[in-house]
Image 1: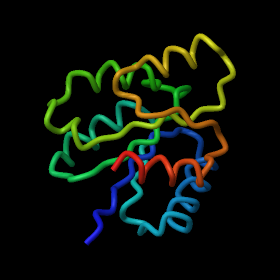
Image 2 (image 1 turned 90 degrees about the vertical axis):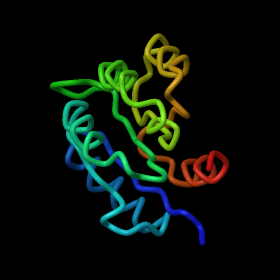
Image 3 (image 1 turned 90 degrees about the horizontal axis):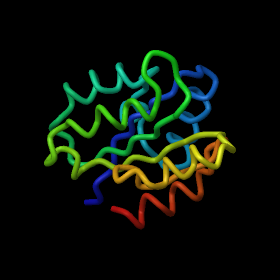
Length: 132
């Protein structure tokens, strides 16, 4: 039996949340319950603290968010349990064109990949299956 990942979308834009959730459920054949949404890094850390028994988690992380942005989330993520982090892949999902920001994303040890908005679902699909 193939293991289906659980997704955590960390995104503050309601339209992006809706579109990405629909793409994931239709294109990757995951159920609504396998796509979890938080509005910022603080909510994501709270969600992670109550879901540490997952076997595979894919995080789609926006960078520009209020309360706690993506970079601040990655700094806080560093403090999580190392065993738990082994089952997590983080994909930064952003529309940034700032080369310094892109370099910072690509140099982060926890980031599996960088995807431009709008979500390139076929690219994500290939990447997920290559990294699982």
